[in-house]
Amino acid sequence: MKTLLSLFDYTGNWAAPFAQAGWNVILWDEKHTPDLFGYHSDVMEASADYMYEHVFDNYGTVDGILAAVPCTDFAVSGARWFKDKDRDGRTARSVEIVYQTLRIIDICLPDFWVIENPISRIHNLVPEIGRPQMYFNPCDFGDPYTKKTALYGNFNTDLKTDPVEPTEGSKILKYWGGSEEGKAARSVTPMGFAHAFFEANKDFVHPLQAEEREAWA
Image (cartoon, rainbow, N blue to C red; front, side):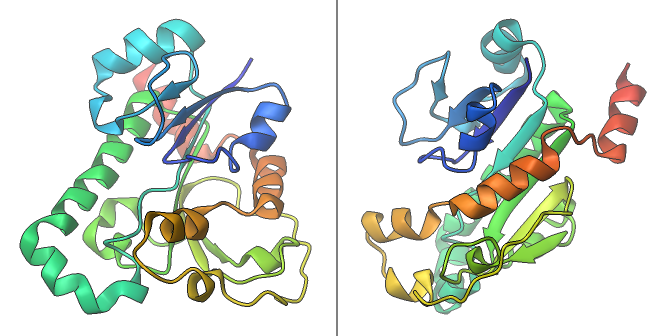
């Protein structure tokens, strides 16, 4: 049975199609109560020893990694606060979270991996993630609203679309503000996209990932 590691996925929406198809799914978000067989909380704890003890010993391999890394200090919609965040350390903490995500990917060597963020400066601050491999709006996959999102990583970008009119407008504008409720509402993964991503990647092995695994074999 394949295993998916889904980081910063509090709702589990993005991982849900994998779980429904029988994959082992490990949700990892600081808002979860730790449960080593289903939920982990602090991504920053994930050293190689931790991964072997709590993930590989229970599940064997990690075959895919989804990472919806927190965007608060990256999204260009909040550019007016960048100078303050750069000065007081918030940006540096968020950058370290992305580097920790990349360390987890390097430890796991999955078949595919993807990092999600809205339009942001993340790839300028963490150039190791590369440039966006694709952009999408939820309305491209049947959910009638906009929230332009970038995807980085090694994964299959050939997703089947189901375009509809964005009759509900922009979710970023609808839930604008710094409240936890607003942040949570903006971060929910649209299910149309989640299903399309699953269908495109459920049996996909990215050539670069296969090459890297072979080099470590």
